[in-house]
Image (cartoon, rainbow, N blue to C red; front, side, top):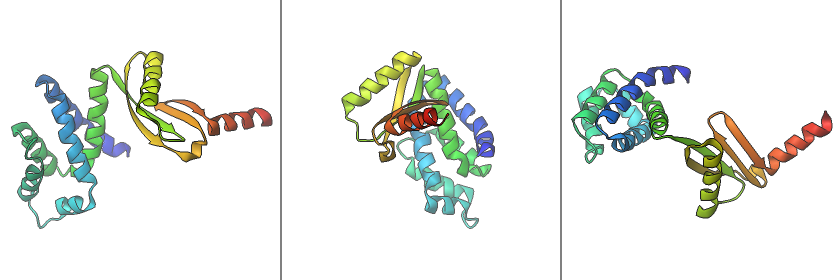
Amino acid sequence: MAELITVARPYAEAVFKLASETNSLLAWSEVLAVLSALAQEPTVAEYVANPKYSSEQVKQLLDDVLVKMANPQVSNFVSAILENRRFAVLPQVALLFEEMRAKAEGSVNACIESAFELNGAQIDELKALLTARIGKRVDATVSVDPDLIGGVRMTIGDDVIDASVRGKLAALSVRLTS
């Protein structure tokens, strides 16, 4: 995994620099999300890796998929990725780009796991709590994990706030056994 990140970082930095200079962070975010999804699709990955198809044929296929998002810069980026045989690192490029974008916009990405489905108001309340705690705007992805039994677990980078029943039971178990 570390190797893919190392390979992806120069591409992400170059795209981020270009997107910043042209005020097109959101557009590039969308392009990279589509390319990342394509790179993770097994049939597309097989097509790209198949030596019977030239880089130009693969590029044409990707340009067709990106038709509404395509511009000369996107086309050049796709060409560079294909010529250097780096199609498989596109998910990491997209991830690194999103981290750089969030940092530039003064926001952080958080993962909120809940034992039950949360409604919009509950999610907004948790995001406001995290925003107050860290002093930055929080963009959150929310998922359901029934193993938590109840409550939520929030992760921002390496920081974890575990307010789940499972977490509290584990903490209680440690206290009782020590």
